[in-house]
Structure formats: structure tokens, C-alpha cells
Image (tube, rainbow, N blue to C red; front, side, top):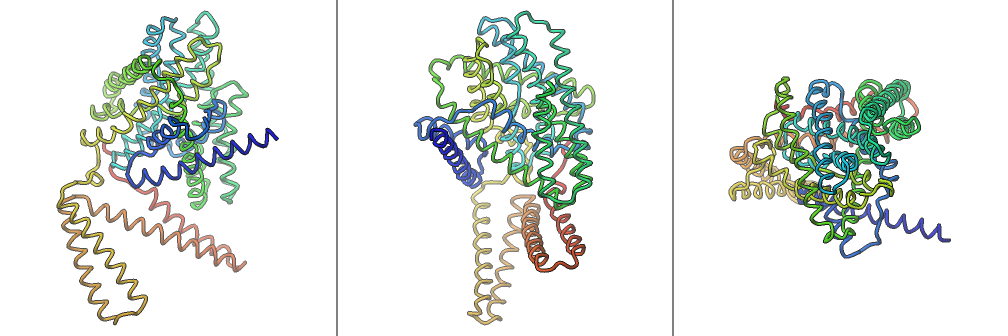
Amino acid sequence: MNATATTETNFTQFFTLILAAFAVSLVSRRLRFPYAISLVVTGLIIGIPRLMPRVHLDPDILMTVFLPPLLFESALNLHLDLLKKDWMPITLYTLLGTAASTLIVGMGFSALMHVPYAQGMVFGALISTTDPISVIAVFRRLGAGKRLTLLIEAESLFNDAAAVVVFTVVVGLALGGQANWGMAGLNFMRLALGGVLLGATLGALASRLHYELDDHLIEITLTTVVAYGSYLAADRLHVSGVMAVVASGVTLGSMGMQTSMSPGTRLAVAAFWEYAAFVVNSIVFLLIGIEVAYIHWLHWLPLAAICAALVLCGRSAIYPISWLVNRLGGRIPLRWQHVMVWGGLRGALSMALALGLSTKYALREPVIAGTFAVVLFSLLIQGSTVGLLLQRLGLASPRTARASSPELKNIEASLEAARGGLEELERLSAMEAHPAWALQQLREEYLDRVGALQRDLEHLQPGYATQAELSVNSARIALLLGEKSALAEARKRTEEAADEYRKIADDIDRKLLNLRHGPEGSSDA
């Protein structure tokens, strides 16, 4: 009976979190506010007055259940052809950035707590993992360049993998007594290279298997097996599970999705993993807010402030690394470096590593408090201001950075009213309540009015035509989805001409892929 009651309680809490995530997504989209930050704030609102029982962030569940889909979804969308163009800066930012951040933060934490360096490096390593979810959402909304977005996303993904390996090594040193840094280096290479080799092998094998399949349900299942299987296999083989998931995702995304899947399957796989990452992120960020509310901050406030400052100092290693990157031909403008430093947010992975620390680790409690403080600061302060930084530095696209003059607002309002009038004319026409010639005359007048308002808007806000094109593309996607739905219904009613139906469906899927994943903006070198 107790087990049943516990199960029901857990399910109720899970449902409550999903319901809260749904409500927050609607509100944040309407207010155009970063979704992840909205979730953390909502978690604080729930946690501070204790509106629901405490839901503990179990580190084993975070690492085993939640982490693979988060890493796999990001890796699936990083294609090798794009990574090859910027492999040098991504590699240097990943390796040197992780090492520098770990050393700077670790040594500062050691001095603050008066403990050996190996002890402090534990905090330095776990807090070096970055979480770009909020930042990337802001970048896409403001139209930041594709190359800058790729650098942030790729550096974060590979940085996470490298930081987890470093964390595994330094925890062994911290709990094992005498530090042997030579053996630690060899252990890092074994974990990292073993994970990459395992993940790439599984990704390549799955890509070959996808070539023999043509069923989106089976193929989605196969990608799920690869995501979780690579992590579990790496754990059994004592190599890095995070490296394995990232390597399998990049390999499968570059080989399997591009050459072995039909257009329809690619759409289905991308949609499944986008949803999986959305659900996992929603739950994790809500739980971050709830967990933070239970920490006694009066006791840990000085430590929290110092930890946040230390992490920013560690992240500032981006500047000297960028100097080296530019000397090697990487072309990273100073404005981008500012964004990369301020946009290095911390999130779920850092918290999972902190909560998973052994109780034998003497600094477990201050490390957890410091980690939660840094995560909260980075999400609420850095995450909510990175968009403003982009605009101040002139990195927001003029196609999406909207002016705010009263004249512009008046034109936009008039345009919305005119479009509403056109919709009402279509309704009256369908009802046949008025003569067709009268409605046609009114329709022409409204169309002239809409055209004049659009020209005025284009004059005040250069790039509005591109926004109009995006609206047309959105409508085209809706029409194509309608065609595909009608085709599926027709296919159910007949057993004949299956090949013809499939050819038409594939053609629709190709058009959808081009509309959804076609060229977006400039690459801004």
C-alpha cells in the first residue's frame, strides 16, 4: 500500500510539473521572455511559500534519465560539415576554456575554503559545464548570426563532455589521498577517447541500420536505443558516458539523418527529440527553482557571492584564448567574445554533478550551495540580460530588432485591424449575406490599405519584407501539413498505388524540410 501511495504521489508531482511547464511556456511565449528563466522563476514561486511538497533532484535520475536526451538532441543538430569549418576555435575553447576555468575557480575555491588544490578542483570542474539553452533561444529570437550561435552551442556541448571527464578525474584525486597529476592526465585521455570511440562506433552502426529501415516509429526507437545505450555501455566499460552520447549524436546526425533516413523520418526524429529535450528541460529548470528555495541562504550568502565572481573570472579566460584563436586565423571579433563570456550560463549538469558528490567529500555542502548560487545567478541575471548585450553590441539582426516609436506602433495596429477586416470579409463571403460585387469592392479597398501600410512599415523598419516572407513560409508549412494529412487519409482507404502515395508524401516532406531548415540569415563572419 505504501509503495502504491508513493507511486501515486510521484506521478501527481510529475503531472503538476508538466502542467506548470505548459502554463509557463504559454506565458513566456506571449511575453517573449526566455523560457528556461521563466521556469526557474516559477520554481522559486512554488518553492518559497512551499506550495507543493519538495521534489528532490535525484542525481542518478538526472545523469541516467535526463542527461542523455539533453546531450543527444543538441548533438543530433550539430553537423560535421559545419563543425569542420570552425573546428579550431571550438577545440581551443573546449579544451583550454575548460582547463582554465577549472584551474581559476578551483584554486580560488581552495584558497577560500583553506583546503588542498585537489579538493577545490572538484568545484572548479563541475561548475565549468555550461548550459546554452536560454542563450540560444534569445539568439534565435533576436536574429544573432549563425556562426556565433554555432560557436556558443558547439563549445557548450563539447565543454560539458570535457568538464564531466575532468570532474571524474579530480573527484578520484580528492577522495584518493595523494594527487598524482600524471596518472590523472592518462585517466582523462582514457575516459575521453574511449567515450568518443564508443559513441562514434554506435552512431555509425545505427546509421547503417537506418539505411535498411523505412519506418519512422522503428527508427525513432533506434535513436533512443543509441542515446541511452551509448551512455549505459560507456558506464559499463568505464569510459565517459557523456562523451559517448555526444559522439553518437553527432555521428548519427551527420551520417544517419542526412543519408539514411527518408525526409518524413528525419522530420519525425527531429520532432521527437525536440519534444524530449523540451520536457526534460522543463522539469529540470522547474526543479532548480524549487530546490534553490530550500537552501538557507543567510548562512551561505557570502560564499555564494564569491563563487559567482570566481566563475565569471574563470569564464573570462575566453579573452586570452580568443587572442590565440585569432592569431591562428579564427576571426572571433571582440564583440563576440563579450557575448561568449556573459553567455556562459550554468544549469542542470552542474547541479547533477554537485548533488551526486559522495558524502565522504568533506566540502559537499558548501559545493552544493555554491553551485546552486552560481546557477541561479547565471540564469536570472546573465540569462535575462544577454539579449540586451546583443542589442547594445549591434549583434541583433535588423530583421528582428524592432523599433518602438509611437508611429511604428500605430502602423502595426492599423495593419492588424485591416487584416482583421479582410478576415471578416471572407466570413461574410462564405455566408453569402451580401452581394458578391459589393464584397469584392471592399476587398480591393482593404488590400490597397494593407499594401500602403506595409510600405510604410518597410520604410520605418528595414527588413520587414523578410518578416513577411517568414509569415508566408509559416502559412506554406501549414498548407503542406494539411496536404500530408489528406494524403494519409486517402491512403487508408485504398491498398493500391502505395508507391505513388509514398512518392507524393516524400515530396511534401522535402518541401517541409526546406521551409523549416533552409537558409537562415547570414553567417556573419
